[in-house]
Length: 214
Image (cartoon, rainbow, N blue to C red; front, side):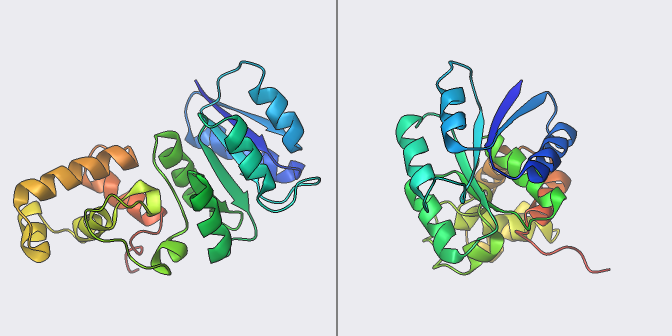
């Protein structure tokens, strides 16, 4: 059972998210609470939670105070932020504090569902526009961006999604084919997929690669 805790003071959004999670994450349950203190009491109850989704702006909480307090008290529980204020500065601050993701409330339902699955599986998600608008990490340095993928893994995934074989990807990136195979294995694990078709579909849902032309 995947247990998710949502702290958000908008009942309509909480209801919509519950339906989305029930539809896309099998054997899951969502507990929705309207304020930070209630969420902290729930986390202190001894119940296990696999993910906490925290609204950035809630009554009685100023700025990133809620994130800082939650991560300080419950550092073992993965936390993601959800907000309509998805500025580059807010996303960067969330990642800097230790959040596992940042979900804009304007995300399409299918993209949000895919992002949730990535984080529940142990990955990291930030909007593609944020990843593209920040300085690129050095290849192979372990830096994480969209869906927890390193820059090199995103390069491999982009070529994979374009239909290139491992040997072609290796030649393009000037790497050994065995290295590409290792990158592909890591990509499959981080995206929770089983083959290249599923990896391509996940990459499109997460906006790592553009959708196919009509």
